[in-house]
Image 1 (cartoon, helix red, strand yellow):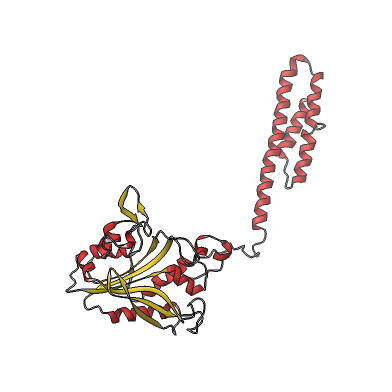
Image 2 (cartoon, rainbow, N blue to C red; image 1 turned 135 degrees about the vertical axis):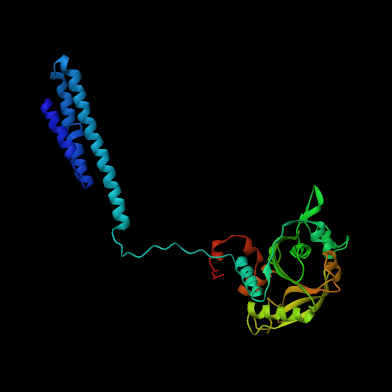
Length: 340
């Protein structure tokens, strides 16, 4: 009996398998209910009592050897099978992941920045939670201005001097306070106003504002800069017009329209059949704003402009509902791809 066990141990030690079927035949031969090792355990009853302890140790040894061999070879076969699945044919095409798309707001914001960066504008950013000085007072908003009312501004309840910024003009003040002219900067960012949400308006939206302060800056410089932007952003045939307007922080002030790129100026529902679409406000920086920031208005002048990115995106991609920007509908977002 001992010789039989030693023979089994040698066979188990030298056994090799390169397939699941071969390994299963080995397991059945040694470990199944009718296998060789259970048969040896059945033979324990014929062994003398004084020899059963040693015989039992030998049986456990051969049983453990067989089970360990099955586990070891199974792991090797599984590992080899996985490698073959992955590396079997190196000529197969790569399974590329689907490339995602950029959000249309990000695309247009990046394009605006790229256009102005070509003529020397750099990007500056500021906090979205702002104090009264930077958001209103330094920009010439009088204490009784409607924009300070709760109907327009989200104030912090415990501190009425702190609010969510209503425009990125607050960053203009921070830049002029900390830098000396010449200043040529863009201020992109998210802003907040207490407005009802509809297809044309939202309580959260995005702006890009621009500021140029230097000696001898004129309104003609402003007009030429904005004409350059409109033609780069929409088409070389785009026309602009400037209409007198009012902003507390610029004087004179203007609204800028572009010729409708949807209908080519002929009239459609986007331009309300006028052939023109308003896209931004602009003007010469008010001397008192320069003075509030420590810049001498007798030496320096400047212009500023600001546009809503949502409105510009609507015109560029012919989108008819501003709420689509915030709904994260994959069907909508998949339509936008760009190198920007």
